[in-house]
Length: 171
Ligand code: S3P
Image 1 (spheres, protein in one colour):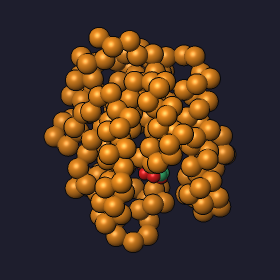
Image 2 (spheres, protein in one colour):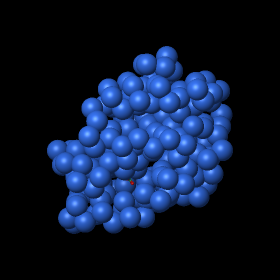
Image 3 (cartoon, helix red, strand yellow):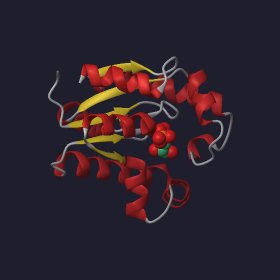
Image 4 (cartoon, helix red, strand yellow):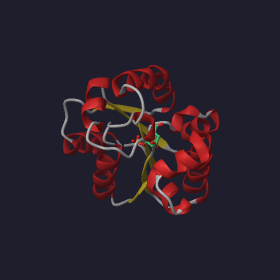
């Protein structure tokens, strides 16, 4: 059993961070937050609008601000699901390494593609070939997820409830 007041889920788009995070929070009796939702609430606008008006840089600034506030200033226990690009900034990786228990939810590119194919709210997948984009992002980010993770759980072949059971046993 690892003492873990703050559990942060990282992984690519389509890994199931939000679904698993909500169930895990319920199972552990912790609050659940989704950094993308907090960013949207703070901005009073959705993510596509933020990317459109402020660019990816503007979104990343907001993301770092939310991570800092939620992890370093919020004292309560929680499970936090993050956006797939949270590991892109060293500043974020430092917070993840030092201030929380980080779970990497692994999904293959084929599963990422399958699970993201029905949604249209991810600006990075709206232009070009989504499979090529997911592949390129994964090549860069997979080592970064591994760098910050305490636990890695494969989600391709597991139902979200099974992933949660595995995590509850491990945490
Ligand atoms: C992003 C992933 C999205 C969201 C934004 C950027 C990324 O979150 O933060 O569209 O860079 O991979 P999900 O991983 O929840 O889809």
